[in-house]
Length: 321
Image 1 (cartoon, one colour):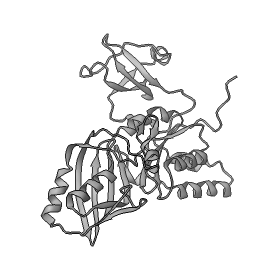
Image 2: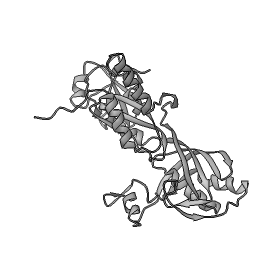
Image 3: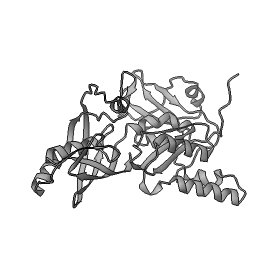
Image 4: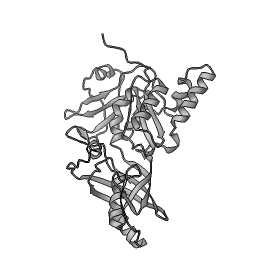
C-alpha cells in the first residue's frame, strides 16, 4: 500500500522574500512546514548571500515550477570594485587587489557590452553539473573542469549609482544568467576587479514585489493563529497565489464540461480554439463556464487538445486576489 504523504493537500504559490545567509532549500522546507503542505518545490535557487523573490510552489503547483525557472528575472546588485574573489562574491577569498582607475565614459562603455544577447561562461561556483556533480563541489576541491559558454540575454542593465568603491546596478535578464559572472567580467573590463557584496532578486516573471512575505512574517502568523486558537491555514492561505499564475502568459483553451472527463483521463479532445494557435504550442487549460484551471497541454497536428500536465483536484482552488 502506498504511503499517504504527510501534510495537507494545498495548492498555490508563495512569493517568499528570502533573507541572506540561508540556502534556498532551507527556506523551502520552512515554508512547507508553516503551511503543513504535503509537497513543495522552489523555482530556481538563490545563493545564500542573495535575498529576494523565491517563488515556492505548494502541492500541485510544483508541476508548473519549471515554467518559473525558465522565466526572466530582475536583480539589484552592488559590487565592490578593486577586489576580485575566487567565488565572485563576498563569501569567497580575495585573490587579487587592484587600483580603481577608470573614467565614467569607460564605465558606460563597459556596461553597454553586457546588454542584449551575449555568451556567458558559468562560474565554477555555480550549481551547474559536470559528470553528475555540481561545479561548486569541484571548485571547493580546487579542481577546474571545462564549461561551455551559454547564450543569455540582458534586457535591461541600468546604472543606479557609484559611491566610493561600490557600484550598484539593476539587471533584467533571461534564465540562466549568473549575475556574479557579469560583475566579475565587468571588473576585468574595468581593470580593477570586482565582486558581488549585495544581490537581491526583485522580480520573477511578472510576480508583484509587494506580494512577497518573509519567513519571519509567516512564523508570526502561525504564532498569531495559535494565540487565537484557530488553524494557521486561516491566516496563511490568503497569501497564496493561484498555481496557474506560473503559466499566466500561455494562451487559454477552455474545455466544455461535457468533454472534460475525457480530457481529465488523459485523452486528446476536440475543442473550439483560437485559429492563431500553433501546433505544439503550450496552452493553459480551463474547464467549463467557471474556467477552472486544470493544467497545460498542446494542440496536436490533428487539431486536438492533448493534455501534457494535469493537476489532481483535491479541493476548491485558490482564488485570484
